[in-house]
Length: 300
Image (cartoon, rainbow, N blue to C red; front, side, top):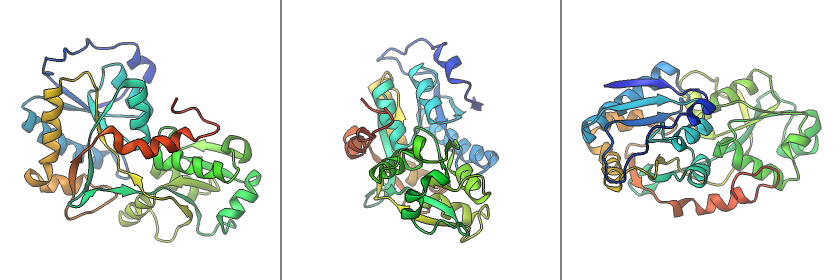
């Protein structure tokens, strides 16, 4: 049985937990969550259906794909035992590890090791804002869009940078929004609905290549240092032997399903793409950054 489901409201999921799995019991079905990215829903579903088929064959059990409405809802669903595993942004993983005991299983990369990505702050190409200094100096005049509260490149990293420049986004911008995803942030900026926004350079390139954004339609005012990649995460309650089965399935994916490996790269097109084992220590640097947030309580 293979299905793609739409993740319901967080409150509903949190209030109806499934029975806990015994640490020694292999689950009868794997529930895997994904968040649509730069593709349309149909394309995302097709790509993740390929992953469903691969994991189902490798694990010899049914896999249900769950289309999530955001990282926060995925975390709550996993805490409520409604989702078993999923792909998650680095900050979302840190929040999930703290609040729901999630574990990092694997993360994407190349032959020489795990990959990284960046965050950026953008404006329209014809914006009167010519520099980051102008955005900071005249912030009261401008509106700003972050992505999701639990997004690393779309919220945590750019927020920490803005705070280092003396900006409290909620107070110092004329108005601040959360767009819910990276493509929407780009559309709100290019459509003139906000003056500036946070996203990632890789998403800009992907949308330009897909014809969903004109080349040169946005200008980058600032780019971050490299950020650790987005891990595949699991609920800690799953049996250790099953978690290792799932880890090995991902580690073998580039060899056994090269076309799927290529399809899973939405914002990168590495010819030597593969997954690498992940552990919590890989995110200690990002965890330290998260603790430096002055105006938003994310990690205790």
